[in-house]
Length: 291
Image (cartoon, rainbow, N blue to C red; front, side, top):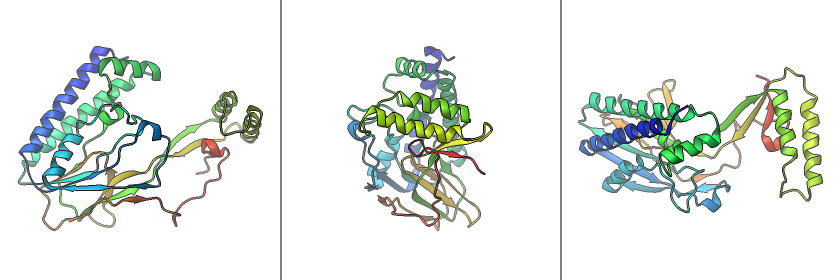
């Protein structure tokens, strides 16, 4: 298990490399800088899932400053949620840059981020992990510190932005699911009329899960908040997407690369390819694994 000294040491390395990376970017020429500022979530609103998200587009020097500042935005702010992490989508297109040196710097920084994450996750207990991080680096949001810096040093056909819905998945056995339901039976649920109604609901869920075979595979497939993504395309078949939680760095591309912007998010009414899930327990997004 990592000690306070080890955590602080790994964090200091990450912090120093971040500062060096920012200094490197300050020295680079750029042909385009765009930053898509998203609203921050106040602590009181962290459980509200928004149906719309307004994007404020910045360009030029203002965007460049916001891009540089985003790499150090890893601490809790008073009054704002630390559970709903603020994302910093943006695009910095560099020109005449020493590609090899900058790539080496980014890879070095991302390696330090991965080592810091590994150091933190070596502490198995969630409460002990929180205390260790809080003591070593007060007010740090660890998930923000883990974020990789994404970049492209080839010249793709296009770099565009979009909004993506993801799911957090967890596989479990029938025994684990029943234990989870047994635990939740003791909770009080303010949405139910009374505790008896709540326990009756959980009892129905337990019956459905108990009727399954012992070897059935189960999965929790919980939808997460929508998040901005970067889509990089070379051809229809050769394409990929990465998180836009941090600005995307495009190094020395050809001038004809097509560049997109991040639009406002409006929750779609329906999606033609949306799969309808038949959940065993709707409130937990618990389903059988059939594939």
